[in-house]
Length: 206
Image 1 (cartoon, rainbow, N blue to C red):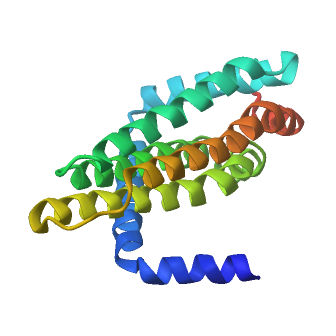
Image 2 (tube, helix red, strand yellow):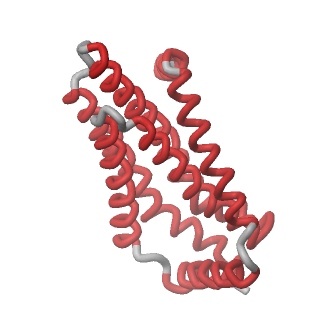
Image 3 (cartoon, rainbow, N blue to C red):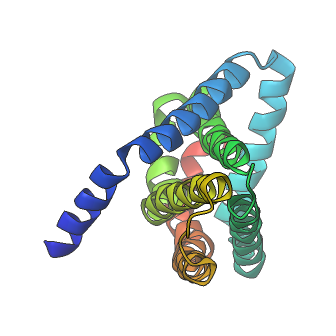
């Protein structure tokens, strides 16, 4: 209970920062929706063939867990590295907001595409192949991007007003801890979700 109260208090104290992060993520999601619904028929069929091959492979031989883990960890590392780099820059705040928008686009492009291709059946894949790691990754992503944006704005204000800002070491330690926590999401993505998807893959194979 104390943990949730602390989280609630943290969000309340930084509500404007979280609002910016949420708006940027939502803008990315809206652009993703526009992109998916404006795909040509041939592009949609091509993506459906790709998805069909994925489900067929999962159904027959499973997934390459090591490769999935590697890709997931590297994707997270690139995102966190860019966010930290921009947070340490005086003019980095707009780029952090852009990263959030790209994150919203990437997440919702896949989600909306699934529903466009498979209709209500897509919810089975969302529950088995996306939701487990999203439960961990999205809150971490929101917290970390908010922390990066807050730090970047502090750097900007410190540069203007010559004031002491939060320790760079403390900020980098927070980034490292968040990245380690994101590894839990990567493990789910590599070792749990393919197993769960194998139970529902047959519903997506023509």
